[in-house]
Image 1: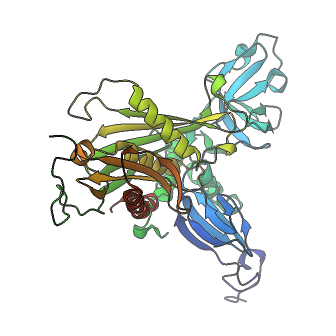
Image 2 (image 1 turned 30 degrees about the vertical axis):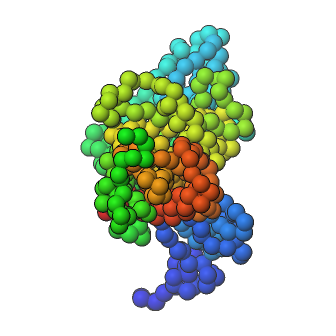
Length: 236
Length: 239
């Protein structure tokens, strides 16, 4: 059987003609806001595009992807917009007697009510549990229409961060960092011998020795540089 | 000697800086010049130099400026004290307030503000060196910087001014033409749809002259739009 291509789920791609519709090829180019991307007929709108008078127009600067019949844009830069269920790393920015205000990197601070905090505290004792400036690993529980959000620390692994380092990366680069089925992230963890927890808001908790942390930082830096590198003429 | 008496264009239609009537001054664009900002752009347009920086979307403060259904644009146009030969007194004045307002209104027509309710997007436009037409350069640079910051927009805004010197309509006035010319018509144009989002007029133009200035602006906007798109795709224009 050596050398014979066996159809498996991981190699059944369009490139190898094993399965999938013929038009499922990926077209990539750079676009600017307002650019005409063609007629809407036969297409579905993905992220970063709108339809005006039957034509598809880009609303963001980034890479256009045509995947099947869906046209979308992978933006060059983006702001984090929280969604329920997101695992995020936040910093405590302030508190009242029973609420913490958490900076999760979104346009608005999230709130962490005492009832969803890590442990029981007396009314007025919020700062004795988590003080201002401390980092927490939490999950977005609820997002209102007005973008106000509530986070929770009730759940497995959600905690106050007491060790390691926190690094940032643009949220839209998380896919590249994690890789297909988490392959790239797993490899990074093995190489650096660090515990790496990736928040959906683009913040990473790296817990390990100095060399391992440096290795993860270098990887993040090269990933950001790769994403910003553009070939002359704008073709990627 | 009064307005219109200074000779700024010769019999062959060559202007005092060597351009023809429809020519635009040389333009260069560089993105990411303010690393701490979410998006930034430096635009050199002739001798003009402008830096635009974008911060946000962020929570709008004070709360009274918040809009429940959309974001607000906080535009600040400011001329550096050293940007002209006469020192500009630092701080907001009547002129910068007016330009900030018209710039915000022009940008509001393209930025998809409804996606960020109760938020604020800060647009800082700093004029480093002023020759003529800084409001046009500031508006164009701000629109490129907004795109660079990843703010969703339906189009870019390109602004350019035409005017009248010695009874001849010309495109993109320089300092002498702006000071001693007879009229000035700055316009903000959406290049993909051809819509107009900003228009001011200083001086008098006949309907025919107005049409000629309009055509110059439209044609120049299309060319400048290509420069902006090139800069957004490659990080700078020219390479």
